[in-house]
Image (cartoon, rainbow, N blue to C red; front, side, top):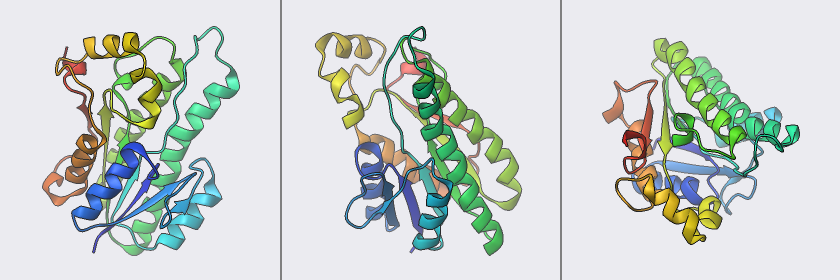
Length: 227
């Protein structure tokens, strides 16, 4: 049975990924600050924590870097600590996970697949979230760099750019009719996406059906980035 570790697997998109991968016959392991009962506690910015979890989980065939945070502040009032925390959770966490599994696959003489969760904000900036936009763009760039570097070993690294998805992280915005109307005005599909719609794409990218797809940033956004 192939195995995949999903950070941020305790809720939202991460939890949907675990459910989808489990239904597809994978051993899906969640890692989160608040993990489910059968998961592992992990702060993705903690290097030692990554080693502890990767060693405990055992051999993996896939990694999904889905853990993330989001808040809003104008760039003129954005605190340095908030900017650094955003970059640490998204970018440092993605790097540590990618490096950790790549080292283990190299030692084992085999390859795997990695999917990173970026955002439409990586290519289509929005006001009031400079730190989030920068972090998600860095995740996309790190994905491309890792894909190029690890391709020779057979490992693939891709990223997904979700649009507006119904998760606990977006609940406050989707609870505001004005913000919801603005968001949906950007989406040709005229609806909010569901976590399962991201999870199904993750499943594809981890599978052998995507064996010649490497280094992409794939929008799953109802047409947001096309409009």
